[in-house]
Length: 302
Image (cartoon, rainbow, N blue to C red; front, side, top):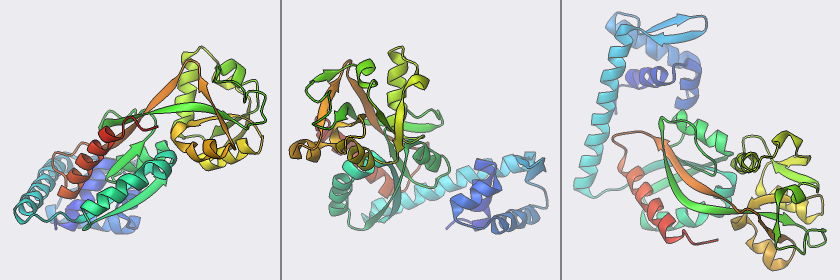
């Protein structure tokens, strides 16, 4: 509804990159540049300084950015007010989730949400935790759900529920008879790790550091990009690994894997992450409230 030139300018100013703005807006870079130049011609002044492949806001650009922020807040406030009066809750939301959460937690949550709000269309993007945080930073998604700490202090992070991690081995493995295992003993075996950028991998590395172990000394026999791939390799006797307990219910029932409790135990939060926006579309607020309630009602699930 807002002036397209202003929307494009606001995105470039927020990201300080024409390339990133083009990706975020699903536009070509020349189209983004054209829209910004149109706005500069309208005001008859430069809004960006461009030096050495970097851009910064001019004094006029800073002023326009401040007003654009207020304008978009008012648009969002207006839309929410009208929807409150009409009772309409609709729209499109884009959620991003790391692999473990997308495969084992979100299907039930989103299924229940869709039953309650059939006019809200939810699109799901799957990546590792680093990728999801990057999408939130670029406004490519409305809400991220991740399994690792988020370092960007400019984002809102809300813990949803605790997730317990356990070691897994094939039933034929030498460790299979144990109930608990300490990391030095576990890492004597061939270890199967998740890929770089995985939230699970990051949490395990932090755990090792807290135990005083050198992460670089871990013998990683292979790196795999999903919980399913890791479980398959462990079932085939190719090594041991550490995974979320929620991912192995079926394998434990079938007896194709055994779980070993880590000593000391290892837990991590599943967290929501989103931009700090004073006014959001009504659909986003409803999803957040629904997700918070879901987390409370399922916090003891394992």
